[in-house]
Image (cartoon, rainbow over all chains, first blue to last red; front, side, top):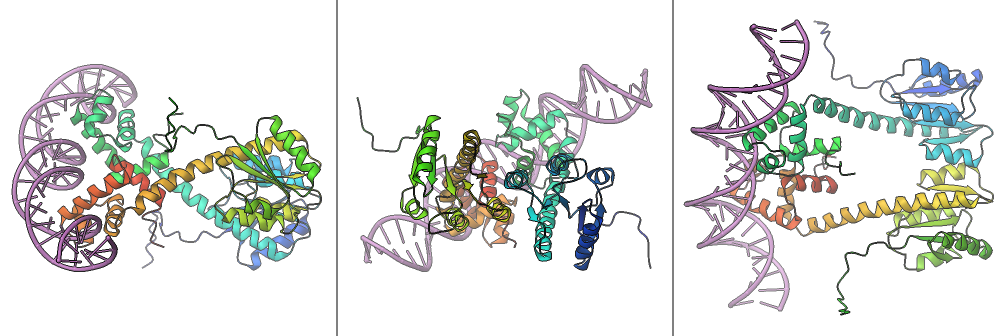
Length: 219
Length: 219
DNA sequence: TCCGCTTTCATACCTTGGTATGTATGGCGA
DNA sequence: TCGCCATACATACCAAGGTATGAAAGCGGA
């Protein structure tokens, strides 16, 4: 039976990889769209940076293909905007009249590739493939870190404190001395931390603390 | 008394940052040497890649400044050689007639910067400063990882096995069941691991296991 | 052959970790 | 005011971690 379980479906499996193209030349946009769709990729087309920023970004594996010279914003400024926004994603630049300093700036700012027009279709596809793989890994790592951060935020102030000290390797009694508590109270907080963080072992908790960057608070 | 303790001196403190220049143009070599020395940097000059490869690389914070066009090897090939060798260090390229694809390749391969001749002294100094800072951090992390790897190699096969299982979060009895041992034997191996790895707590050991990449052996 | 290392295990003992039950106080919002 | 939550602590009990002592077997090198 087709029971439409309206609950979430964990095996969301393969969200189609999407390439976002931003270029003011419609002919080029269409050519790229055709190229990408020919290898099974989803495509979104925009004529300007502003249009993209106003749109809802697609999920998971996605990347941006744009001309360094855009109407309105500079490609490099736009790159900075994207990187700072929550829709951060890998960028592949195209250029007709780029120079080396511009290329260096773009690459230093994290661009995946920088193609000079005219480019070979295969070069573009290679760049996009690499970019999509980067984004997949990145968003995976992001999701894991975010999940842990959410759990961590569900801890009370005391529990966070205890977690930091416990994962730094101190014994319960040492933690107790450090923050002026009795050992039994530390044990209780510790138990709460384990449950709330969904940690199945101390090793687990230590790894979560690493992800959270706990203990690197000396600076 | 000047007791010349021939043993190593841990407070080696500040090894002078060194810039290695490789260029076949002696005038440029000298100009760069003068520039770098003017801000207190050590400098080593070479006329070709081969000369550098034959020399003993300087310690700690160092970086390489070289022309993309070298006598003999291509700058990009040389970059790959350096990256694969133990004297891996940040590279700053200079070029008189570079193009964008070449720039992109170099940057993708990890170059810190790519300056077009003629360049401003300040741009070169900025690039070198960044590169040296990269190398300092890198060699710090390398040293820490190497130290841990050395300790790990002093473990027996069984001890490595136990370390992997313990740091994955299993209890002694579970480890015992996993590799068909009695619990007391696991405890003994575990004690040996802690001592040999110089770990002051389980949290410590877990972090070392992370550095070693233990547990990511599923692939 | 003897020594040393690795590996294994038992018995005993102590320390630490973890949980349950019960008590108590203070803050904060319905 | 009542209830909820965070915080703190005690007592008790059991599980797990850690170390010492002693013992035994196999293996490889001096």
